[in-house]
Length: 434
Image (tube, rainbow, N blue to C red; front, side, top):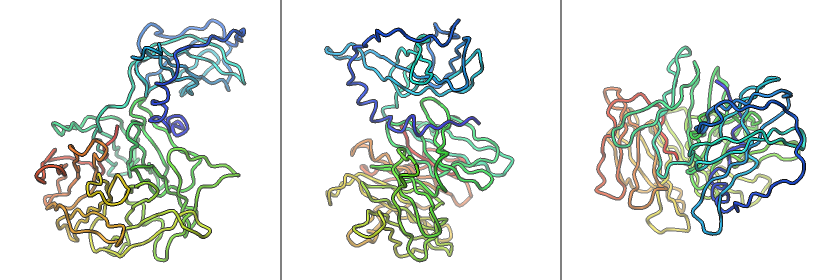
């Protein structure tokens, strides 16, 4: 499986789409004489429309090993003042290079566009030609994805798109043999799945670009623990046995002159206790759960520190006897506080009992009374909290008494009845993304 550093390329997909649409279409022609590094330039299939992530091959003489590709994309917009939207200076994802050819991925995350291709060498660049690229924007509505982990070192897992009408899964990408992908989260609008890839006991922060269809990884990061998504995205790393690093995702940059904010683990909490699942965040607060290893789980709250040498403080709350404790987000309909979202926990009773869904009370640091119950243990929870108050739903992956797995939905704005989306699946995680 080829991997590329997607974090630097697509970390601000949501933001750049907004700003890019405001850019003027006035394409100032560079009056300077352009350098000619390559000769006999030819773009394979130059007359076709490429799909985002499809391989583009350029044939030419004079390609050097350190040459790279940049892309300027332009598309039509409905604005009387602007003739085109544009996104310039995109980094081309190179998949192969020789002295006579170079291949890269057609860009994604943009409307249908014409894309100019430049070869960069040092501080100069040469225009090589132009291609058409199909629409690669994020879907309007959140989509449901299921993760199948490899169940043995010699098997393969995959990521599937789940049809919200039929419950049927369609493979998006297959994992390599022995790999597992867990703790999936998404920043809505990015069309990227972030998660933890693990193979041979090595854990790495990975992401899959759903627009361009390729994997990227953060090769510069230290030991990753888990992720948290919501109003912000955070990645959480282990610095030592009693220190964590808390950083914004995906803008993390590690240099000798900059290290991310630290948080000191409270007594009794080990980093490995947080690896079993992702968390959620509301503004600057992160909500996780810790597997205490003794049949109990504890809510874990990470907040900006008010004073002291650490940027964040970590609170380990009272343990609950249960088989799973899974945080989730919903819209804050109670009007309490300034937060747009409210945090909840799915609490699966011990020994395969029913699951209670409880909102978290930040004033008392306790859970409120259950607002819903499910007759089965819960393996994963997803919420379409960003789709609006009139369509709020919980999506849960259950482990039934006959050991089958089901995906069920709970309408938070309706009668509060559970509906079965699919009655037979093999997923280990589910996540909503767009």
